[in-house]
Image (cartoon, rainbow, N blue to C red; front, side, top):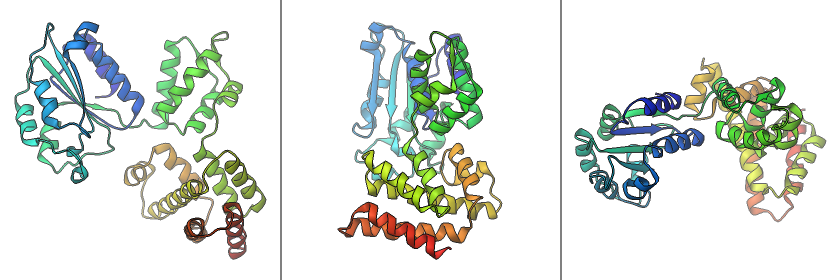
Length: 341
């Protein structure tokens, strides 16, 4: 089920014994946590609520709490975070978890406890018995990143509840500057809502003034300048980012990542992959894939590959050379422009 459905159910009926909240959208995760915690009074929260991070705490500790009877209340609420044993990365866990006892718990959970597993991962290891059993026994709550259209609708619904409206151009720019990331959008809406208290409308001007362009977006513009052989614009953008205290190695890493994504999109599209399939295969936000498709369409694969390899070489020079990063980037731009001229 999605989060709105969960919120509705919690108001109408008793909570389930076990919830599996899977996905990486932090705003939706916070909504789930808040809604479940409201099931307990402030006094009950003190005595009957537990929150366990399995990155540092054994699962057995959380299970001991979950199996305890509520103290001066009707229900115990236990949150479990970072259940890495549900993923393919479990060998990297620093804490040993008693999965066998967890399987026993799943088959006969106490009716006075609500155990909530927050699996903030894009996917789980479906081959594992514990994952299969948990999905069978738990109520599943989807908190994966929303699509661009879903994020738009979420924002409109939120603003309607706040008795606010937003200009179409303002919403479009907000989505662009947050890359349709719901958590970022909601954080920006806090400022924008305050700004719009008098007129009850969020304008394009407000978004332009209050929502800054992210580093990734600046790099997106920089990619266009590089691929357009616009040396002057590329050097100006790079200089501005350095003045903003962005580390050259970090800038180069993001550039490399963007060119790698463009190449992957270009290659996979030729094999018939759709936008949705690309997002799943490349583990990227659908909006970022949409932008990458539009950007990759403008360039030849051979030119993208040449720029990518040039940036890999630039990374090596940044790590080993004593020359100024801006000079090294300038040399890269000149060499790339001449090679594809």
